[in-house]
Image (tube, rainbow, N blue to C red; front, side):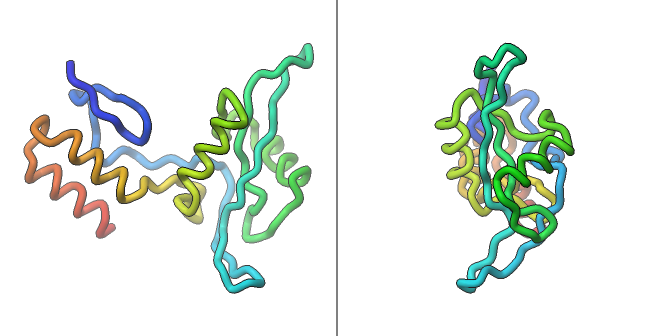
Length: 148
């Protein structure tokens, strides 16, 4: 069995789908808004450690502090995350891991909370699958996904 690196994960190439169903990483909406400095944002991430019932560290979640085009305090945004179900947010084994994910995916979350795979990653996926699938089809799939 051969493996391909896909967005930081290794998947068997026999089941690799270059056009996977895009599911939201956040269950909330995130329209783009113009900031006072002229920049545009739709998701500003924060994190929270989730503890077990006996007050031991369990995991860390990432959640947006901008929801529905409005900026919230960390506490308000965490309450929104709890209201939508903590299980519906990305979870990590450490704050460091969460920060790395947030940095890697900065600017890649759309208005519907869907993580858009960066173009560089899609090129690397196509490169990793070269020879596994028909190269012309891999390239066509990549171009089609960019033009969508």
